[in-house]
Image (cartoon, rainbow, N blue to C red; front, side, top):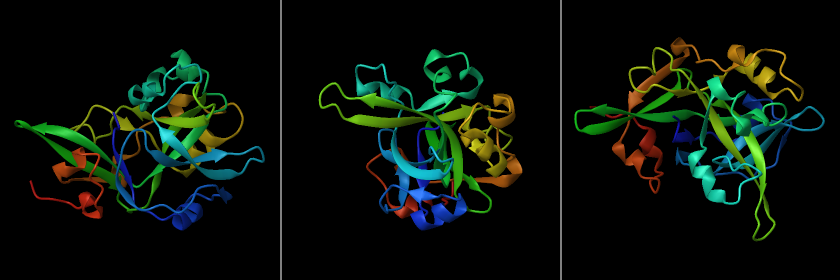
Length: 225
């Protein structure tokens, strides 16, 4: 599962790094501790085939839902069952997005404690999770909310000792395949795979990351355990 991640990179850098044609979100403060239900930057392909930067609510709320709270239970989707679970299968043809991050957290039980670890690219650059989105209309005020889920897969050699799942991180070729505004030409099993462990690094961070109220920049710093 991926339940927390970080994004400390400024919008201008993201626009350049991911070849964004238009940004539809305002500049935002660096966030070391992004949690479900928060607004997060995503990449979507618009009607002209261009990459657009938008902000969606993290935690998928299917269009048929009666209550927005279901999003708490749908922050992740398993790559292996995307094409068999009705909720996700109907989104696959046209509602694929990339969710931008520069690190994510997983917890490992060590003795009686759970120690959080932060995963990043060795390069320190931002990256993109594979994601899906849907649109939900509030029955109370009629407002339309776009929400998203992060797709997870089996862990690579780096993540396996800490957790049995990891988010799908897309390199540029697979990101282009995933975002294309037409049916996928490559099979899901060729796109939604663990990133090469040699491209990643991991280190322990403060347990304070477990509290959603904490968002200090030093939460991403390495600690000694």
